[in-house]
Amino acid sequence: MRTTIDIPDETYRRLKVKAALQGESLREIALRALRREIDAASEAPLPRLTEPILEPHQPGSIRIDNEQIYDLIGFP
Image (cartoon, rainbow, N blue to C red; front, side, top):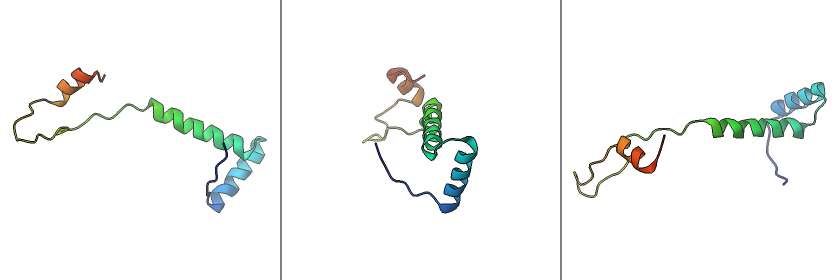
């Protein structure tokens, strides 16, 4: 798939120099950086929810805390 992104001139120049020094193409360096970003995002733990996570329609109608919800839906 092809796409277009705008890269600041200074960043592009530095990237081009790095690619030349390493004997790689800009594409190879960009793909490696994108894969690293994706891999890092998939390794990050999901954030815990904070109270209140459910707003009752009538005050006092919901009596459940985050730990009970995690138990119900199987969060680690």
